Image (tube, rainbow, N blue to C red):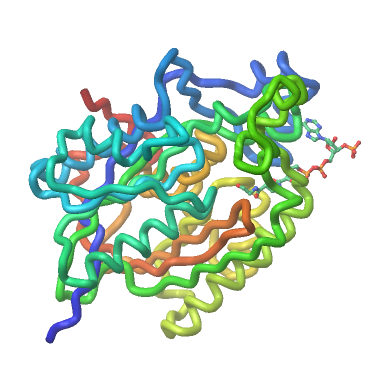
Length: 347
Ligand code: UT7
């Protein structure tokens, strides 16, 4: 029997209209544009500030655009995986809400929580469903409303994060394209360095937890930085080695957008020149599970069929990894705006 590969056949994305600038953040906490640009590399981030709208709102916009671009009918979709740490509700899943909003009748759907590595995990999971031979169209979404878990009185975390969503379509092919390999790792020793203290089953919400800002992200940035550089680099090296990839034949590295200095350190270790590294952190910040597909959404018109890409991410857990993809289509440049400006509206 011929081997079935899971190929990416399209991308859709969405970022909210509201732009939170460094100047505005400097009015909320003791920081400056210079510090944020110098230490993190973020100029602005998008914030979903409309009352009553959560992660599924952005996920729907992204998935709707994806379905239009791939000319997919709601009846065609078999499975929806939403990678998110900021679900609309504790229950039900954001994926189930998304199914309803997209009018999907036949799909099953679930959320996947691996924080900033969520999209990597979801991509490989979706690819495995395709490889099984039983699924024909799978939507994999990375979506996070990070502003809902950020303390805007904490200068150590509030400049870093933004809101956004993007999605890929996965379909089967017997050609040599698609999600070719994945190195995914988890190490629970990361808990003390990056977590949210309350709101889970260990520490339920109370007036005490509210008063003490315990529902927001806590991060020991320096430690996370160190592990991020070491582990993203080694996951990429493993992918390069076991797929016998020469660094010259790599078309792009798509790193998680957490810090420009992390991106530079990882790609320098890999000896990949900056022209081959997708970066949009300056405009969106860290959108957690959405960073990787948002990069592809932004840079889609630079991609050619057969391009060899490595996606890599690191986040709370710790959870990290790298995924090797052979890109499956030449993008229709008429349907996507200029690189870095892919802000098409969907209804
Ligand atoms: O996506 C999930 C994974 N997360 C990451 O990958 C994040 C990894 N970590 C980082 O990106 C960086 O560690 C941060 C951006 C979070 C922090 O940058 P840093 O260069 O590691 O700064 P630091 O935490 O070592 O702090 C250096 C100084 C401190 O002052 P003192 O103690 O030296 O006087 C901080 O209080 O910078 C201070 N500081 C700030 N100053 C101005 C921290 N935040 C700010 C700020 N503005 N916003």
